[in-house]
Length: 174
Image 1 (tube, rainbow, N blue to C red):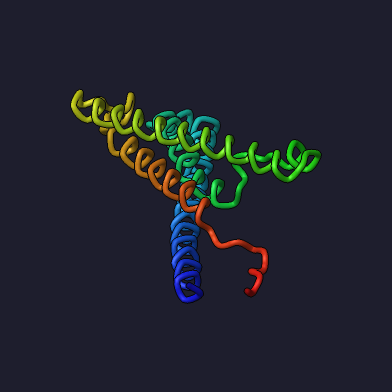
Image 2 (cartoon, helix red, strand yellow):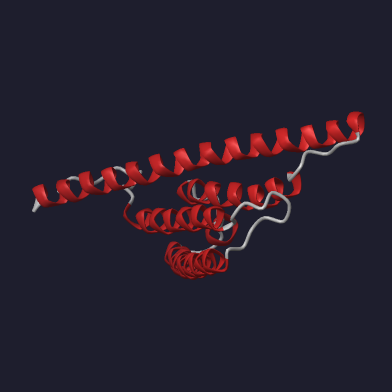
C-alpha cells in the first residue's frame, strides 16, 4: 500500500513538473511575442513620425499578436493559480465551504476552457477552409488560430494537472 502511494506521488510530481515546464516555455514565448509587438509598434510610430511611412502590416501583427500572447501566457497563469483567486472568499469561511467553492470554481473554469478550446479549434478550421487572410499582409490567419487553439489545449491539460499536483503540505506517516 505504501509503495503504491509513493508511486502515485512520484507520478503526480512528474505530471506537475511536465505541466509547469511546458507552461513556462509557453510563457517565455508569450514574452517574446510581446517584445516583438512592442518593437513593431515602435517601428511603426517612428516610421510615421520621421519618414511619413508606417510599418506595413503593423495593425495585422499587433491584432493577431495580442491574442497570441494572451493564449500563450494562459497555461502559466493557470499553473500559478493566478487565473482565479478565491482567497478573500474562502478564508472567511470554514475549510469545508472553502474547498466546496474551490471545487465549483475549478469545474466551471475547466468547462469554460474546454468549450473555448473546442470553439477556437473549429474557428481555426473554418479560417483554413475559407482561405481567410490578414487584411494588409495577406498572410493566412489559420496558423495563428492553430497556435492559439493548441495553447488553449495545453491550458486545459495544465488545469487538469492542477487536480493531481503534489501537495505542499507534509504527508503524515502511518
